[in-house]
Image (cartoon, rainbow, N blue to C red):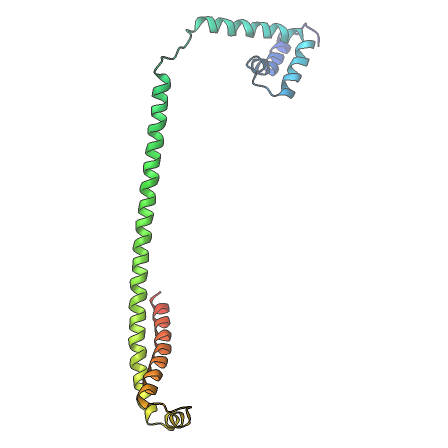
Length: 184
């Protein structure tokens, strides 16, 4: 590239390279972009001249601005602010967790109560239904056949109690399941 540009060409060239040169000065380029700028600088006297101007501007700004100095308590204040924000975040997370736990415990208690009511209701209904059915079965031929052909001598009272428990338990379980499904 020759070092004599017309003013319009020089402006276009500056527009294309000024930002890259400043980024190169600030070390804000990756390795490939750095190599590209350095290669261009080796071949372009206009950009070398512009780079010198940018360095002068940077030096003048550095001299003109006061050096910032942090007081000795800066680190302590900064760490206190960070700790304060962390504490607030932890407190908020704890509050949310406690609310979720309370809601879960309430739902669990409500579920247990509902299940208990359904099971008790089902068991009572099953026992009542079983007693009514056994009252009908007591006089039936099937009951008489079971008692006479059973191995060993079965007492009719034990037979009736065992039958009521088995039949009541089965019917109660079906009623409880039906009630639970209907309640949902």
